[in-house]
Image 1 (tube, rainbow, N blue to C red):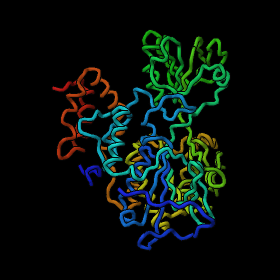
Image 2 (cartoon, helix red, strand yellow):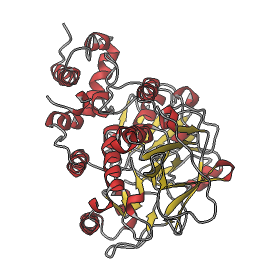
Image 3 (cartoon, rainbow, N blue to C red):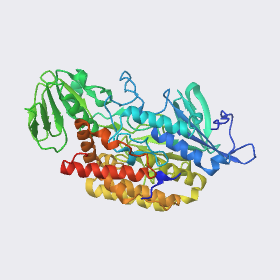
Image 4 (cartoon, rainbow, N blue to C red):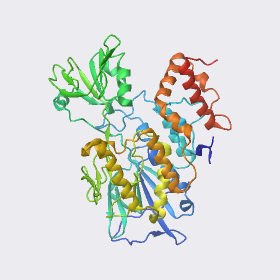
Length: 501
């Protein structure tokens, strides 16, 4: 079973302030060669991957590239770095019980597995420790500036570089911007009729503020949303709230635990807030609701971009492709290979957004995306824009065939990758960068069963058997096979109620 997970510090350098009009040529390094300056925005899991891949490059090792990552917080980790919910919105949506929803052998950086015997679905603290170990192992800290938010990014037509303004109005110039600021910060609040009145009465919060179920001891609560956060919040609050109503679009009405948990469809209207009365999509209603928790997702947000580089609006219908880059808050459009702006106002090779696809294993994807970005940065002609424009049009037509001319629905679906699609996309990027590696069949198959595997692992935890299953796993000469075999065995054992002997 071959897998890239088995394959195998310097200072950031001088970063000059803008003075007058810079020349379009790149700066020279000590050897007189052109130096490419790369800015990474964000030091969460995706930004760390970008810095590491840049450091691995022959250009960096030869002194031709320099990289600096700006992180607005005082440490790395992004969403996995905890913070109290006292900001608006909170610095992270991390709640106390959060674990990964993907087994770590499928979600880890390809160059850096989790430690042996790590639970398959590790806690947030374990993931954060893993990220710090990754940064230490590959000496990434020297290239990160903490407590430095990026305030603005603008294309300088005179210098043909990006002007990046950071705190204290320091302006630095870069040849390449890699955007890796994450997309779990700005809550998405649905426009359901009557919801604003409930919010005005203080009866609604978003799950971004959720931390622990004990905070909801006593009231009757409504949890809106069928994603992992919604499932976790509904499950965790059930022992504490007097009643939990879980609203998920299209779900069949069902009551459990003596009606202490009620599953209902989409909320179509919030009526009187004092009476706590709501109506669902099937016409049924509930009253007496004390509080609503919205697990309704997040917006794509890039506060450092503004016009003309990025327009904050839904893009016009396709064809033709718009000449500018749009942030609809549901997607960024148009991006070639889901990475590069397919625009002409600045070179597509000079700006890249990584980590945008949803419902994927983000860390291995971030690594191969970063490799693709560097290939195009070093050789802009490797990006066939004519071909990429055709691919964008075809994707748009695919969604239009299913969503009609609903631009919001098309935008919302754009980055929601299916099981097969995320691996096909990774394989396309592997081919693009020139490696023979492709995602193996076993990885695809196990990923499709990850939710079932998560339930099996929780059952092992309840029975006190997890430690026995994990003992010694990952310590041998073929750790990848050991983890893969373990996942298969847990699935088989669960299907037959078999216990470890």
